[in-house]
Image 1 (tube, rainbow, N blue to C red):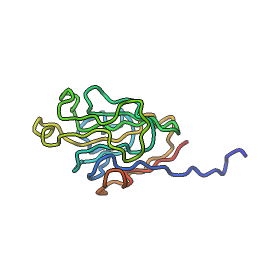
Image 2: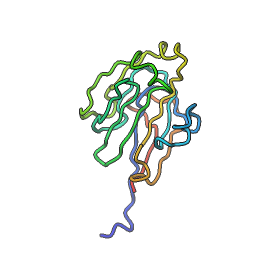
Image 3: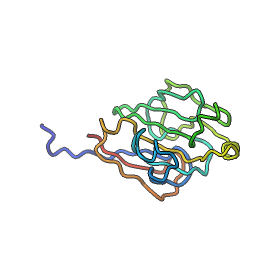
Image 4: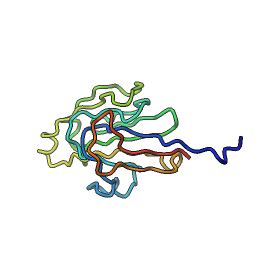
Amino acid sequence: MFGFFKKSKALNFVAPVDGEVIDLSKVPDQVFSEKMAGDGVAINPTGNTVCAPADGELSLVFKTKHAFAMTLDNGVELLVHIGIDTVELNGEGFEQLVEAGTKVKAGEPIIKFDAEFIKSKGKPLTTPVLITNHEAVISEINGNIGATVKAGSDEIFTYKLK
């Protein structure tokens, strides 16, 4: 009736890429480590295909293909940013698999990247996965820090809507 006793169900994101989940504070970029761009976790990738971490609309793929944004039906906006300072590569080493505006399912491949090329350019592969509108819609985020995860299936963090 008034929702006073309504329990908010924990929702989750699955790993967009194989790797190890790390706390955002460990990301070698202040914008991410200090949560200026959003809240979530990061992954040190061992794979090279980045998938959708949830069902939703692929709202933006950056021209440089180093990052993409999604909008979920529940109003959550998320960003997956492949590597640190990878925008400087101008799309080299990245292959876009899905066009912006497409509805995607969790685990659907979005971008492939050449890990060796990116590392050869001195760019860390650390991949933040963020809820960018967290202050407006999220009451709690719990990361699966330290877990080794498989893209499209393993949980990287849970969150609760306000």
